[in-house]
Length: 78
Image (cartoon, rainbow, N blue to C red; front, side, top):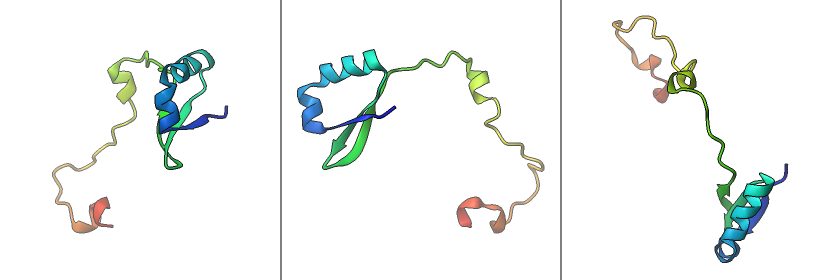
């Protein structure tokens, strides 16, 4: 599915038209500023999962939480 690109000024002048287009077609509209994509307007898709289901699998296991941590163990310092 190809997204349409429009400038900020074009979008401002015809925003409601673009909203209806996205609503009907489901195709996203990319708003650009000086030719650079800055905003994507797309149809809202509700996540029907519970908060716990959304978090499942997103937490990593910490094996030894009370062991000292050296500088070589910090990802940000690598």
